[in-house]
Length: 369
Image 1 (cartoon, one colour):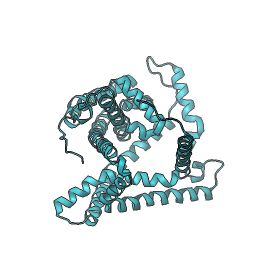
Image 2: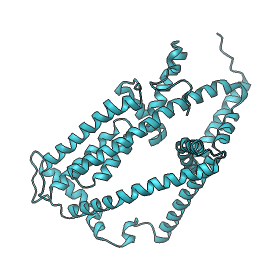
Image 3: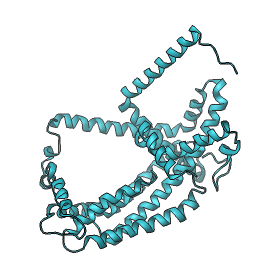
Image 4: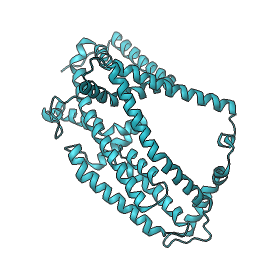
């Protein structure tokens, strides 16, 4: 097949296209703080839309307004109940941790198999930045950066409050007209590209829906398991650490990063003399083993169905690439996008027509929501 010649007209079009692309990138970077609340609202609306449809169906509502308000009230009640039961425990654990940090001293404590230099490093870290003095201080201005003033901090606080308020308003309006907005976005695609664009959209939607909702449910179970496990062990900040593990569970293998703060908490906890480091840390490791076995061998096959089928090295590489390109959001969407790209490569390059059309276990071909 002969390639198209590079005429003057084609070169000009390519140059103008690159200029337009650079302009779009510059505009997105300039409007980052304006676009962030809208993008966050779109993500929240995407997550809440199935609940709006469920409320419409279960309550036999014709429009979306009442279903949207009902969904927001339900979500607010759930968040309120969680805060009612968890916040007092978290505050108590933080106070306990503050007391341990204030009394931490490497001079009168010796943990077997851990060099004294480690204790000295932790003591220097806790002392640096006046952390101990910060825990004793009730002066709000001490929490501010030295170069900032109370007025600038107040203005920044108001700006962030307005951003969150705008996000909430965006969520309401997007949910009210979610179906029309989705149809409108589809109509923006030029007619000659609609067939391939709609196919890619449907494949991405199917992959994202299956991965995100399944992985979010598994992460929720993981957070519950770790919160219960750490609470049974009795370490400080057990609820906070359990929730942190659950959040990081959305990114493959990132839950193991929490082993570092868990080890530090166990070390500081052992400074009180009531417990020893290695038995407590060993119990925490047992919590990791039991929770991971339940999540990986029981919940994941039941909820996610067939695995993504990616080698761990490919998973880590895709996390690095997408994380570099899109930051934290890129790391969250790395697996479904990488799987979809590999499927397209198998279908269109090495001619395997069943690569994209095959659906995960428990999901029919028409399941698009």
